[in-house]
Length: 415
Image (cartoon, rainbow, N blue to C red):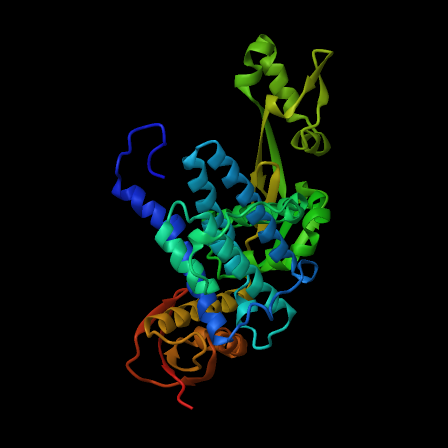
């Protein structure tokens, strides 16, 4: 993973840390998360064996990604390109499985009722972990052995057949849909970083290109949750919220136009929003320079965007996202509550509480914090498994929660 296979191996401690952080640790955490909840719920995988056509869309997406992984890994092994093999595996485990699928589906594991949704997330995760233990067996023989035996109870992963791709489970349209959403969420988070608004601080709305609605319209709730916004709005005319600036791509058109470059630059400044949209969609347009027609494509120009007042925009690979970054008093108070939940969750971990333990919270804080807690008390309780929130003046540890000084501590509820 550290060195290409065609060069002498150069041991690098930083490279080792990278392998651990991008592959081994996410794999270990995914298995541990699954095992904790499966053991708590006393899950029988045979009972949870939900048919594919009754699983949720995100389960089918992961199965599609996994089968493409199997296909890519097998092909890379046949090419004797172990570098590719490891990169395919690390990318899937870190990006697709751990940082997206498991994180997105935590609430399905937390459900009390073993309904079809919960069965589906259990069996899908189980199938993927068993499949991965087989895929990684030639590379990490001891880790894969431990995973496989713990999951299946069978003698050895090295006595099992190597996974083969099931083409029927590959759904490229579904992958495109989910990958588009993930890209838009990444862009939206970039906007938040630029304007220094934390993800836990809610925003009122996000605006997306209306052309994307058919593809990702049914995933609006997912986008709302990931970007922490109240509304996802698809708009046909993005120019209502941002301005386009079109300039020549001098590397492409410099030698072609020569002395006409100044006239070309002026002509680009007069393009309509519709013409700019056509270029963004990789369509060719025709403009006039000194009464001569010139066909222009996207490679000949650089398109930049600036958000109008009250909005912030990010654009990449023809994906636009516009955030309404104005914060109302209620949004600010909700942001305080969400940050408080995060601090409580961290304290639960530091105190080694079980994921199912109920707690009590003791606190004292600013008037603004109290106002936030009054509005969002039920939300805080639900998210942190809290039975009581008690105001009490005591020498509790002090925290800064979005600029508000709050002192609090928690204790496990003893029945």
